[in-house]
Image (spheres, rainbow, N blue to C red):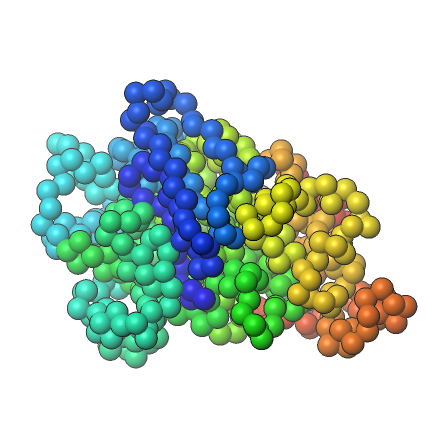
Length: 499
């Protein structure tokens, strides 16, 4: 398991393969943004998106990054993705009502990198040729960075010299180690970026700035960073139970799968993290890489979103979308974003629907080990959504029938709405939070019902009693304070807002 965020992006104009924990191999697709054969004013379509299966080996998914010229449509407030040239103009946007200059915040990181690596930045796309202005990914106003700066030696000591015993995971971005800070004794996760890998300075800056400005109980906490020479490291709070994907797929023998209540608790918490980004942040933030490997679980199984290197500010004013180079992970990208590069908060809602479907079914978003027609999770599920009688067949076999039938129907209905092909037909994330918070707080005794064969009158009677006894308790790991008492009745799923 990987108890730390992972990044899937880079400065070079390439498609990168995600090295998943259980994947057999990574897949790469190279496209150059400056290719003479490619019209730079057009977005390159992506095959193998969520509406079609991606080729590959094993059960892993792969990251995508197609090339085209970025066309920021939000007055310079967008967060450019890796490799996009140019510096956004200083605007007047604010995030969470904060009003000091973002350029100063970016400078504190960028200046740290400049003074330690001694490299010339004359050709750095994050600087203007005439005057080395640091990259300003938030394009507006914000406070100086609160994250602590570390030297490489400090983090080397914290991780025991990046020893094997402290190694906890690896991906295309680099390696993650468990560490203990000498100054405070705090246990942390240290992400050491591969110097020749996917994560470039731009994404490094974006992640540091985003997590310094955005604070929520369902977002991972960035403690600090290191930009020492050519070393790039990020220091996070340690998430003891690792990534959600490690509790859903390829479980080792003897490991029990997550119970139904816990799955709904995780889904509701992750949705609240997205709601904060979409609704509470000003301007809204589009996460752009929502997937099960980016949802981390702390020792109390409290879910938190991680890995903000691809995050981008959403449209403001009368703008309906932002246009950008397509980046993300195959199987999770919304079809309109994969085909046109037009990004909205509804793109995140689609990705959330894929993860919710993973939680319900126990299947990977892309799994080439399955038989033909079942490689792509969404493509497999779409026909089944049309017939409620087939819903029980969609439930994770690992649950062994230990789930409320009505809850299963409602959760699948929410997933189906999030996965609408037309973005306008998908619900707002706030409505998803309302529905899933209700489901997460429904009492359900999985132990009692597990002793009864599914489909028997006794099983069905207990299932009905569980569904009719109202909200309270059973959030599967404990919700936020006061959450159980105020859990709303679920809205009719056919009336969830699709604005």
